[in-house]
Length: 72
Image (cartoon, rainbow, N blue to C red; front, side, top):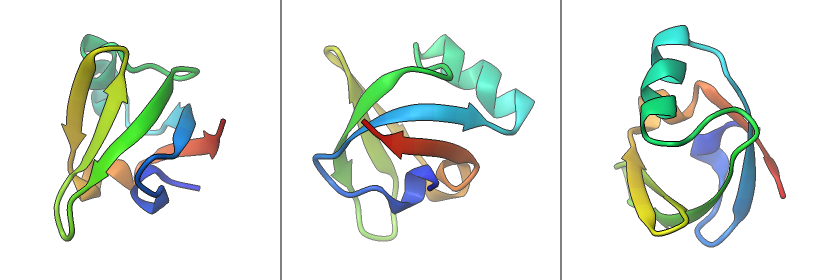
């Protein structure tokens, strides 16, 4: 499943980030393959807001569909 398909409130584990540039940017924000995050908000036709510890990160839909995740 890709990140753009998760529902608000679901806890997910990042399985793989296919695009190398996106992977590097995600690591800068503390999200790497193997990280467990929570879908804090899913803005209609907008970004997906992830929460890890006390940090929230908004990821656009185009990027989210390139990130493979699994329910945790």
